[in-house]
Length: 411
Image (cartoon, rainbow, N blue to C red; front, top):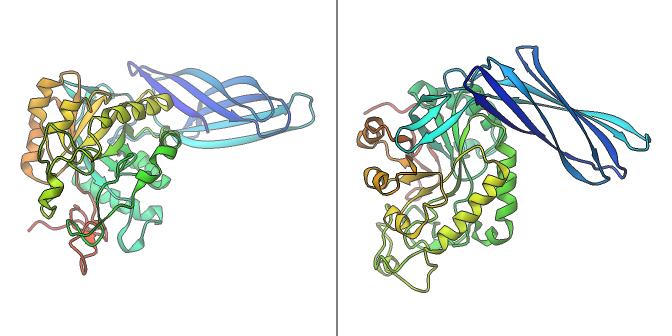
């Protein structure tokens, strides 16, 4: 599938650049002809064409480009989508075979910009991000659900005024991204809940011991680069995606990273953590390791897509803002510890937003009243399985919607 980078140019025209990555799976050198057809409502608007030669078993990129006059801009209010048809014509260099393949996808045209002083801009206009976080399950229906279930949920969130979704904390079903594009939801796409350190897992119930370590950390050293690259390449053609996140609460206090700057470190939900686990322990991973890994992950993302900002959701800014953890990120997201005012002064080149907030009016008022705060994502949009105090409760009740997808009534 081609990677589409469509740049808006003063909204009078769109300069279209499409990089078609082609793999020659035949045993012979082949001439490749690429046609990228862009249409809307059945009318063909652009026909982009280019050719190239690929050796047997080789991989190459064939670029096409052109200009679309007076483009229809994608936004939550007007989620215009164009049809991109890619026709690949392959002919063996020795004329021994010839065949044609076709792929179709929906793409959008829009511009995004995060300004450290003025917040988030979509298509040149300021817009507050009013988002919610979602898990991948659908309650009793499990994790593999029909798209219609998500369409019903998204419609309810849209009715509440929601305009953005944070995918927590892994790739979600492809149909959900298609729905967000079609229904007009911006997306923060997030990879990894763990890096190379093992987080404590509440296996019995939320904040109830004993703990287990059953996460991605075991696979991170070998698989993080390929997994992250595949993650970006799978989703980067979606116009709804406005930011990539490379980690959720990786800097959670003493879980496992710590630092001598803090003799005692407690997270926002550590009420049952033993005192011994809150204290600085030089045998635990040093938090100074996090900026090193973050820089590497950001570099991987930028290699696959340089058009969107990269972030991570920060759980312990008291320390992370002092270790260099913020340095590699284009934008900084806060989970429950929104040090907006202080960090806006300390990091004047960083755009700030609430990546995971409670439902309080105070949290929203800060975002609403401060121009430089780009927006926020509530935890969560929908109730989900897990993170409970234990049986008989089987799901978190943090959502605006129930597990069944029904809006909750105000008390």
